[in-house]
Amino acid sequence: MPSALNPFVWDRPVDDPSKIVGMDGFANQVALILTGQTNVALFGPRDTGKTTFINQLALELAKSHGDDAPPFDVLRVNLQRVVSIPGFIGCVHDAMVGHPEKRLRRAAQRQIGALEKEIGFDIKVIKGSMRSPASVPAQDAETLHAQLLALRSLSEHLVVVFDEFQRLRHCPGDPLAIIRSALMSSGANHVSLLFTGSIRNALQMMLERSDEPIFGEAAQLQLPEINRVDFLEYLDFQFEASGKRADEDALEYLLNATGGHPRSTQQLAWECWLAVPAGGRVTLETVIRAHNGLVQTIERSEFAAVLSVLMGGDEGEINEVRALQLVADRGGDTVTSRAIALLDGFSSHSRVPAALDRLQRRGLVDRRDRSWYIVDPLFAEWLRRASPLIDRPIPAEEDD
Image 1 (cartoon, rainbow, N blue to C red):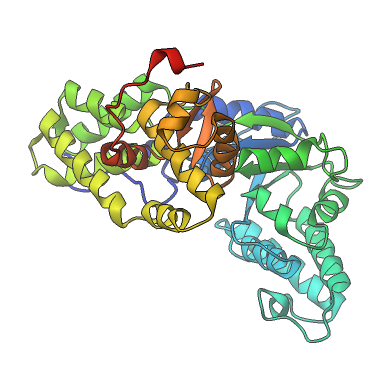
Image 2 (cartoon, rainbow, N blue to C red):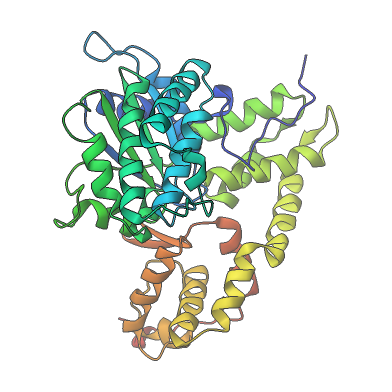
């Protein structure tokens, strides 16, 4: 009997294995690296499925991969908003006591209880702004170190995921050195680390600069794109299983419109599913109408807010807006063209790469095969449709 529930999840990470698309092979590859006691740094732009992949990886790590690769437990520490050592302590505490598996959650509670007796106060006191009056940076660093040492005791085979790891580059108190001492030294051979990041340059800087504590300590991998055929089959199956079949041209248009971006593809599929009554069909017209509706909502989104802030900024920030428009209008292969740069308002084409680098640090653009692209395809389409320059010809003789 078809399900009456919308099968498409886009507003949060997916943890249902039946709804995770095309990550099995990559999860197996990363699991084998981690169980072989090699740390991994995984980069992927925001909203492209890193946290969903972590869920898939945890399922893969729970399997035995041979006598020398037993099952591993996974603990995910979300560092998205960490700006201080007390904040880091709070995130580790939350990850330990909030672990979804009861066995590890209770082991964590025992370790934290023992640690609090040792240090003489409640760890929750120093979470966030709730700091002990007597606490000083050196004490916070010692507490974090002791907490990470306690974390090692949760499992005989443990992978610790530091999600959005690049956030620590703004954290005073040398957190990387603390991590190295507690989790990458003697006594931690049963622990492997996964660092994930949405800002490639920041994550690479932490791993490739020789003056960084974790220099050269992780294999660097890129979250792969989902295979197009796998995505088509997934969408086709989910529509049909819920009693709303989709035409082939509708599915092709859906994937073309989103470029296979995981979040946007699921979101557009969700909108199409809502638009069709039980037992109905998802047609090409259904997808086009839903896509147009989503693109129009960008006007009220965080992207429009960021664009408004940049438009009110200095010349460097205005150049970021120009660079966004350039990529939306002309694609990311011609960013060094003098004619295109001048058409978009740059005083010199040499200013375009710097603007794109700043946008990359904001997580708005990225590079694939040396070509720049706007990460969110709905934002890119909104920019393209609003552009007064999209059909303006470029004088060939002025091009590079």
